[in-house]
Length: 421
Image (cartoon, rainbow, N blue to C red; front, side, top):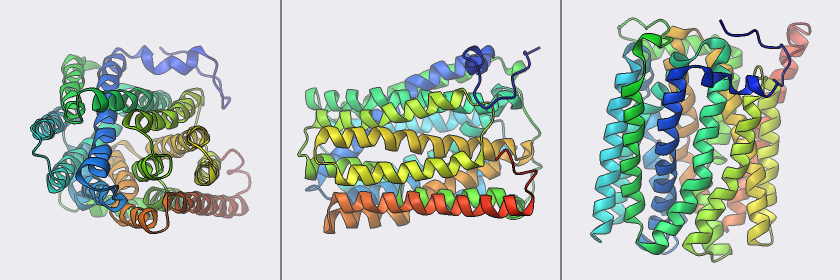
């Protein structure tokens, strides 16, 4: 039996590693970190390919590719969350990971052959997004199958640490790879990296999975999820906050790529390292989250303020290194927003509804990209990259205002029950 954890917000050092007490989580985390490095290599290489090879520094083209890649999160919403709730998540993840691996290899071969065109990248981005739309809610809720509920915030935080540790390594490696042997090989490396997570899924001890209740297979699953969320003011507020900051703030590919190329005239290596600077902040934010006993709504609003401040500092940064420092703050703040929102929504949702609720969360964050990314790209092209970062700063401050307004209403309605939020 696991030792009882202290009731404080910040946990002692050993308790911060409690998710790794589960053998299945250790296996899953090992495979995920390899795949995450490949994922960040591909994201970096894709943006560089579109911005510098297939177009003449066209930020709008990067925005369109982002819209095609993240749009399926919203378009396929009627099916993705229900699939995560109703089907064996391990088998579903094996299918989605295999599909994404094949797509990465195919795009890599096309690029190496010198045949890649902008429309090819757009098609692959859309197909990759379709697979990821089914993968993401299943992957996020699968964490709840690996650990008990009391350790879920810790497992979510370590997942984010893994993803963003890879963010430090992947873009830098991609930059070196692009400079040394070409962009296509970064895609090939990502395709090969999916073998690690497929192996980890195969090696899991299935008898030890902490599977919750499965949703009944019936029509109207999405409607049921929407009705469930509509009756929860806390969940609705989080979704509104995520829509604002996800649509106009989480356009890091545009922010970093346009500032690197158009403002600082950076090389491929320097561009890759800028993404790694941001990852330093996200890893720091994720590691801090592993030491929290429970997520707080007020931290979600605070993280949004810090995100706005980080974007504002980046917008006025006079040089490459100052911009990199601003990205550290932006990364830590964005990780606080994503981690806290994920933990709050999963812990407050009944197990049979988690897949649909998390699919809604992902659809709101990514589904705003088809709207926000082209707009932010247009701002970067028309007014300059610094103004695009200004849009991100405004989104963070508006998100924080929405969160604080909800907290004020809740405290006025029930002062005693809201004391710990």
